[in-house]
Length: 117
Ligand code: 5GP
Image (cartoon, rainbow, N blue to C red):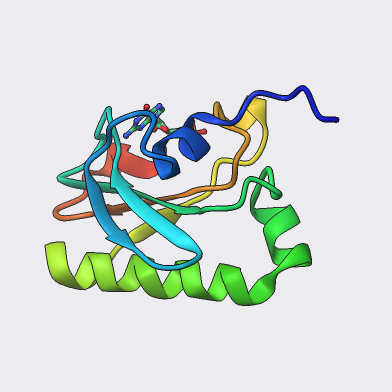
């Protein structure tokens, strides 16, 4: 039996923690980042927490990664001009704080300093 606590994103998927939901499909959820770093800053998150980061997701379910990219594109088209930066922090020293894979969709008049999310 696993004793691991569900991730913060699993708790959002389960509606145990509130979030502003931007889009949702059977396998993905998109929410507003709680600490936005750009005019559009949305997290696109696979509902499964089986993959800790994008490397694991690409290896384990490339179709789900493609779905994630398509959702990111749709969000950037709806909320900005369709152009966007897609950031996957991978590893603690790269700034990853939640080890349940998620993409940052950054869009809308990005400044030079918005490389990181
Ligand atoms: P990471 O640092 O792992 O790449 O990204 C985690 C992101 O999740 C951060 O940008 C952080 O602001 C966001 N975040 C952490 N906890 C919550 C939460 O409870 N709700 C929402 N909406 N975003 C969160």
